[in-house]
Length: 475
Ligand code: FAD
Ligand code: NAI
Image (tube, rainbow, N blue to C red; front, side):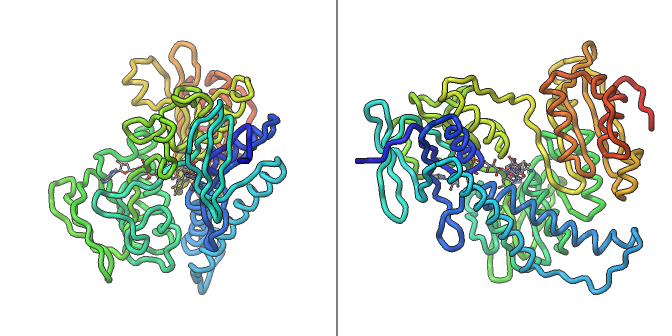
């Protein structure tokens, strides 16, 4: 007889593994099926995020930043480095080790929470007597049955039409994290989050990097003032970003890749590079799920159709994370995983989409939560803005990194915080104060009246909140 579970989670990425843990905490008998394979063919829990996304990219961002500091900035501190050498193989091995620690951490958490883990591809077989039969195709094939199914199958990199990834010359995020030698010349298509993060890694390590963006505006979803400040910093670093291009034919050969494109002035350009990273967004992944067998409905983009509570069109089948609508972020997937497990238990799980933070881990870092100034203008909402530059922050001066600013947007009448936008050092950490404030519906004055440690970068947050009322103390 097939093994029976209260909850079967399909996918062991941040959405799936967190849903499995929360469901187990709530007393359910839980299974999680994940098909990701490590280099040896074994299981590697954690999905895109752990294996080829958030974690390895941040490991390489950290290593490459150390290299850049040692080569270019240590001298400012009176530290002269002679004979600086780059060992890319060691850097990649360290990154792989960081990934493995995270894989192992999730395996441990599954054991701790008594979650049954299956390694293989899960597909729907049929609905039967208030349950669903799921086939697991791994080393062996088996059938399991679950009362509730949580689909968390994630997303895959979008390829340019007619230009599949070969992961040798034409790289997705996967190949981009495994380049063995620093390419002399590197092009990226798409100046979104991956384009900027991976472009920064390889530029710091010595590549001549060109980023080709189709849209005429840089980081259109980011507050304009912040995006402009970030672009200035990237230009200064030598990251070449061309906006408003139309990419044409791409030819890949033994010597590298040729990218033909039309630039914003309408001129035809032919660019020869050693490697090309294509980072033009991601597509929801339902490959192999056999959604048709049970009539699970997808939308026009191929994402699983869900309502605000992550319910699909089928009773007791839920879907979360990158495979559904909304931002493709690990923490959004996690929050949905927790909320769904709690709903299955009859509780009132909730995800506040207005307070999901975004972070781009470049240098300077870019982080924001809530609405941008252009969104507020478009919606006709009356607002007040306050900014504070890191140039006037003592800790930033001590760090030697005074790029950027913190910006508050608050309702003109009530002073409620509507958006907080940051570009500068360590703003990935600073943004959580703004998230907490917005969750508690704080006013800008609330932040302005809170005591912040001195000297700290967080004082820039307090000062930007003071700036909303035009009363900064240090600028
Ligand atoms: P995934 O992490 O994609 O996991 C899905 C899992 O399901 C995979 O293991 C897959 O193998 C498995 N699976 C799929 N189909 C089946 C099946 N039929 N049977 C069994 N298993 C199956 N987000 C951030 O918030 N911060 C970041 O810094 C960040 N950096 C990123 C960097 C890069 C380079 C990339 C590509 C993404 C990054 N993201 C980041 C996005 C983040 O990785 C995703 O939003 C997140 O992984 C989505 O989680 P998920 O659980 O929905 O799906
Ligand atoms: P993205 O959506 O961030 O950016 C894609 C860019 O490519 C856009 O600017 C788009 O205009 C451009 N583009 C699309 N088609 C094009 C074409 N044919 N020619 C030229 N430009 C084109 O997607 P990206 O960078 O691939 O990342 C995917 C997702 O992964 C992100 O949206 C984000 O959700 C997640 N991610 C999150 C990170 C983080 O939180 N720090 C880091 C990396 C990825």
